Amino acid sequence: MTTSTDRLKTFRKMVLTEPVEAVLVSGPSNVRYLSGFTGSYGYVFMTRKWACLLTDGRYETQAAQEVGHMAVRVESRPLWEAVGDLGREKGVRVLGFEPAHTGYELYQSLRKAGFRLRPLHRKVEELRQLKSDHEMRAIRRAVRIAEESFLAVQGLIRPGTSERDLAAALECEIRKRGSDRLPFEAIVATGRRSSLPHARPTSRKLKAGDLLVVDWGAEYNGYFSDMTRSFILGGAAGEKKKVYDIVLEAQRAAVRVVLPGISLKAVDKAARDVIEGYGYGLFFNHGTGHGVGLDVHEMPRVSRMGKGPVEEGMVFTVEPGIYIPDMGGVRIEDMIHVTREGARPLTRLPVEPYVGGS
Image 1 (cartoon, rainbow, N blue to C red):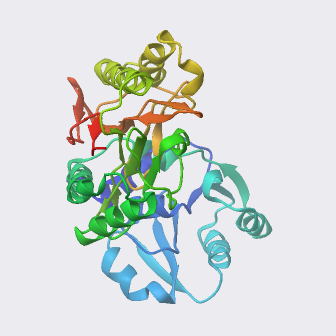
Image 2: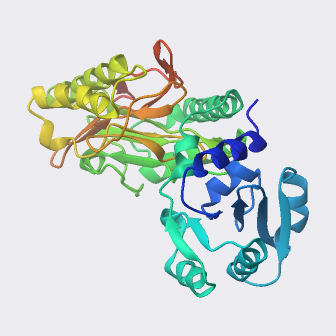
C-alpha cells in the first residue's frame, strides 16, 4: 500500500531536480496527499532532508493522530510567519511554492520574509494522477455509494417531480450511504435547461417528452466519484433520441481508444470526431473528461488542450455532450481506470435513454 511516507519520498526525489532549497505545499488536497492531514488549514514545509506540517491549535489533536512521518508544529500566529522562521532556521533562501494554491497575500508575505520564490507548477498533482491500490479501493466505494443512491431515487424520475426535489432526495441518499461530503451540488436539469452543462436545480417540474440530465457523485475516505446520466422522459423519439445515440456513440469511441501511451488529446478527439461527423460539433462545448481523486476535478485533463499521454493508473471521466439551447442537452459520463490493457470501467450504472412515462 502506498502511504504518505512513500509519497513524500517520491515528491522529494522529484523536486531534487529543481533549483530550490525547500518547498511550501499549500493546496489542501496536496497537503493531505503528502502528510495524511485532513484538516482545512495547514501547510507542508519540506527541505531536502526534513519535512514539517504547520497548522493551528484547532487541529493539534487531529494532526498528532494523522501525521506520523514528519514533524508537526502547531502555531498561534499566521502560518506564513512560521514559514519565515523555518526558512531562517534551516538556512533556506530559495523557496518553491505552488502558484495555483498561493494567494496574493501569502505570496507577498513570503517575499517580505526574504525568500526568493520559484513557482513549481502542479508537481504534487502530477504524482496524484497515478492511483495506488489503496486509493482505488476508496474511489470504487465512492462510485458504489453514488450508484446505489441514484437507484434509490430513480422512481422519482416521473412527470410532476421538480428538479429541486429530485436533487435533494439524491443528495440525502448519498449522505445516508456514507459520503461525508458532496463533491458538488447535484445537477438536475430538464427540458431546455438541460442544455446548460452546469445547471442548478430549480422548481421546474419534469414533463413527458423532456430531456433530463442528472450529474452527481459521492465521497469515501477523501476520494470522489463523478457520473452523469441523461434520459428522455417517456418515449419521445425524433432529434432527442438521435442526439442521445450520437453522444453514446462518441463516449464509447473515446473509451475504446484509451490505452497507455496514447495522447490525452487523442481520447478527446475520438469523441469529438463522432459528434462533429454528425454535424453537432458546435454544440459540444467542453472537454471530454478530467481526473478524479482527492478533488473531483484534477489532472489529467482530457481535452483539446490536454498535455501528455494516458498512463497506467490514471482515473478519469469520459463525458462527451451535446447541448442545443432550444431543445435541451445530453451528457453521458462514466469513470474509467487505465490498465495495461486499456480502460476498465468503474461506473456500472446502465445507460438507458428512456425513463418514466407520460
